[in-house]
Length: 371
Figure (cartoon, rainbow, N blue to C red):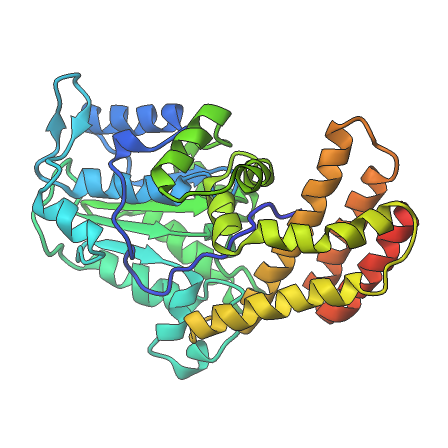
């Protein structure tokens, strides 16, 4: 099951909020050490893959790494670790999402394409036109600002596994491959992905891979401390279990009030796990999806309804999957494994364009059979 539990809310080419320094990234010490060592060596590789589970800090780290290598004030601190001046021009520009040489490529950028057909297309991949407009053309241009570490332009491709590999657009990844084989001087490309197997083997072979993993309990506690939100103990305990070491997943849990969703579904799921079909379970799940999608589209009118619906369904199914995992942890495997399979079936049905209400009502019946 896709464990993301979160949609990528990026609709522009730059980050919308200040980022942390690379040294302040939580729970990814090995990855951060690798990147610091690369900068300290003075030989920063031109192509990287940041690979690991969704929501664990890959994109945040990519932004911080980009800010570090672009900053001419970057120098060893007292411990010998490369660090920029906290209030440098580069750090201020990156924090405002205004650095002209830091480019972020996402599928949502299709909404801003020069091509109307691309703007109107469903956002299921990162299309060729976005790659052309946001990577291949600007990477050939001179940088705007003076930089450090020999890197003058940084391109971050988020959800790189979505790079279009359809028959009609087979050249997309191949065109990126050509850039990686013959990189313009001073350019650096970071592919952020939770499914690196979707990238061409020839692309993977030309990139330096940095692995990311789920955060441990201590790092998650530190993350909640930074969040600065007062969360009731019962809700926080549930979100910590739901997140499974993913701050992105935890943040979605807080923002979307998923604990309230879980509590609303609880009596109906109790009945299903006792082997009794509850006629309101399917409609209740569908209602949560509909409400979430309506709110998402209200907040971000340019968002894809299809992507928003898929994200909302993932959230509902993630709640159900976490409940079954809790049964397994408590030593009550009866029905839990089959219920997890039925949840996976529902996800596959929705991905195959079965109407959401049909898929979720069928799931409600299947959960009762699983017991």
